[in-house]
Image (cartoon, rainbow over all chains, first blue to last red):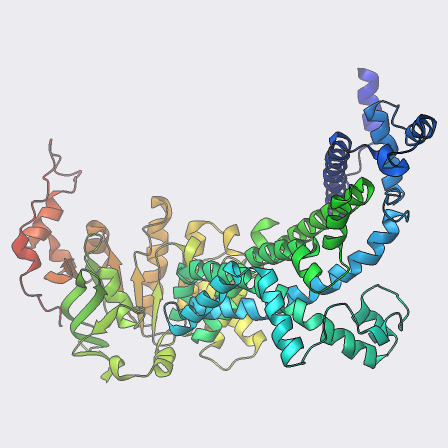
Length: 352
Length: 285
């Protein structure tokens, strides 16, 4: 006992700097959440009534072949050991091989995810750039025609099925008017023209300074992106409106008016400054939702994204692909949450 | 006495589905370089009167009056833009709870500087110096630190003194104090009032002090308007409040416990429906 105390004195504890502490805590919480996610997906993969061996060898394989593959997959080991193997693989970015096309799942994801990311990012930009001002305007002019217009716009966004809007959009803007490119990411002449760096064609084309490809890719992405943007606009504008209404009835807004401030500054300098934190959460969640991949949109526009990838894998019992996709989507969610938490601290002095 | 503010027949109306609700009904009064108290219970229209003077009643509320004259100029005839030059610069207002009346995500310094620069063409450095000076005037210790702080880091008493500094920095002629001490601890109420009183006196300002606290108003003001159901039922000199004649005022006075005249039972205020229909008493000087 005395010795221990003595030790303590000789090696005084150096307190960790605050930023290091925060970083370590954040990393810790990411890894714990990720571990939980991996465990759940792994268990789901194992309890699914799908025989992974049969999916590989086929129904007519002999018993010897079946047993060999069974051992090779490590299915004879206890579940926990299997999980540790899986964990080890995932840490090395190895999600196994797709049963469907015999390619590594990680390669497939590296190909389909940028496609979704490109679409989702453009979509969320539309949603934020139009949705936030619309929500603010609706709140400031509560009950006016602007408010009613925003309400109807959002209601249509909420209630119209996206596949119908997608098909109609294609029919009108591609089929009849010819203003935009059709389904797919680029026209057939421009496929594989620019070297893939990020996997996002718009960025790759810009990096390559190949503006012709850029223009073509843009004409293809604009319709599905505005469609997704419209749906996030519906949500973001409604949330912005309700956040703003709450702030506009606050007493500090009266203070700002008493000071003799113009209404524009009251709204943007005082009220809007107070909703940034809430807004970030809403936008981050919308973005995460879009990054999961919108299956219907991707199918209608033949967009090779992660949504349609996971769906196809699921329908053909390709569990490795499904698990890999799920882990990536989960990771995105966790990272976006952490990111919005960080911004919280920047924008709200009370959160420090 | 010279009239700084002259209000004649002020009405504040709120249309609703059940018909029009009159929050303030034909109130007339004027304000000189004095401390005018407006007392009344919740819903008597005292706060609405204060806000109507600044034309801060938001739609669908309606403000009507024969005139609200500031130095002889009718405020009701001004455009919204002209009104902005009146707010803050000529008439200012301190509200009840500094926890809610200061913007939580902006530093105190920025909020005070903003109040000054809205009405004065001053460089940031000048505005900063002026703000520090003003914070010192409301007895804030370490004003440099307070300028960098956020409202949630302040106590209620400090918050209210900051609020007073912010509202007085453009040097207005009239200050409306709407229940400025109701949200504060009893121990700091007096201090905040004294600071406000000192500044108002030094600058020769007019003060409208809105409160539900009869004793406080009698103690602190020169003249008192007693409001009931949107009307002024009685006007008297503050030091003669105990001689008040109206049964409502008498009832209020009798419902307060007094140390110098202890009683077993306090009286319960008996309301006469005739009070709310009787014509408003004029509070003109």
